[in-house]
Amino acid sequence: MIGSFGDTMNGRRSGWRSLTFIVLPLLFVLSGCKVDLYTQLQEREANEMLALLIDNGVDAVRVAAKDGTSTIQVDDKLLAFSINLLNAKGLPRQSFKNLGEIFQGSGLIASPTEERARYVYALSEELSRTISDIDGVFSVRVHVVLPHNDLLRADATPSSASVFIRHDAKANLSVLLPKIKMLVADSIEGLSYEKVEVVLVPVERSVDEQRSVPQTASRPFPAPLLAVVMGVAAAVFAVACYLLASLLRHRRRQSSGEPPKFEGRADVRAIGATRNKINGHAA
Image (tube, rainbow, N blue to C red):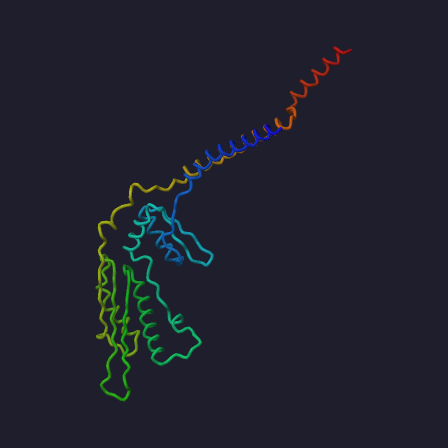
């Protein structure tokens, strides 16, 4: 009895081992090894990054999180290429604080100097956010100077602003230079058009950033081929489960000494004919 139980356990282990050798390689082929490229992204920016990666031949996916943000995942072999590609397009974009975030209540009474510093910083952030929405702009910094002038003095120091724009060399922002200066001047009280300086820095894409996707990287499965492979994997899994169940049932019957069961009408008729012959000879 102990020997039969050991045979049963050995048969079960061998069955599961065979099932593992068959199914796991198929699952490994189907599942791509992807890593997180960027997390905590807004949906619009994540879709923009996803479209850029896919257009350049990168197998990328967007995964939505419970907090409403998104995560971009790519193949681990294309991680460096994807980072360089997005950086060349200024993605992900700069994050700016709005007036509500800067002046949110902290529970403490702020000094006039602190309130003024917050106001200047809020103006810089809002203007940087607006200018960064121009097509081809990678990054923007706006520096605002609001001197603390005495109202009783006649020789007041005028306000000034400096704008730094890093943009794609293909985007001709020089034609928008007067409009950018006017936008900044009209957004700050006491600032004249002549006191706004704009520095444009064009960025050329390097040779490494212009190269295509590495040929050694794995390509995504076409949809029809993926469906066929998944169907074959499911069929192999079902057959393996059936064989394993049959093996375990056979081992269990051998260990318990149970005689084999006859199923089907042909077997029943054969048993009935044999019984009639035996009864006829006995009579």
